[in-house]
Every structure is written in structure tokens, then in C-alpha cells.
Length: 73
Image (cartoon, rainbow, N blue to C red; front, side):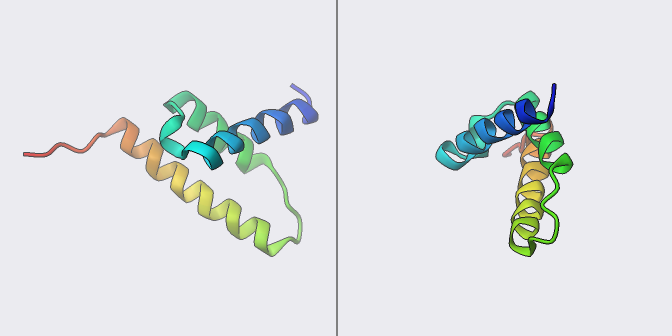
């Protein structure tokens, strides 16, 4: 994939997350979103980098919860 295809896929996944939340994505899509977001460089834009870090943290939690669902006794 080239750069523009990655940006298009990242945009598509971010729209899904924006509209429906992280639970709308399966584990494969979450992993792809995490990979694309980590490779995206926002340069000196502090606000974008802070949002990126926050979203990556949420993705990691969702990914972890997907692998280890909570059990209620």
C-alpha cells in the first residue's frame, strides 16, 4: 500500500470509531488502526499528538479487553 491508501484506510477506520466507538471494530481492525495510527506523523502539532496518544491508549485497552473478556462471578 502506498501513503494515500494508508491515509484513506486510516480515515475510514477513524470515521467508524467517531460514529460508533471502538466496540464497532473487531480485533483485526483494531490492530490495523493501531498500526496505521502509530505510523502517522503529526510533526510539531501538539494537540494532534496528544489526541493520537489518547486514542492509542484507548485502542490498547480495547484490544486487551478483546483478548481477555471480563468474567462476572
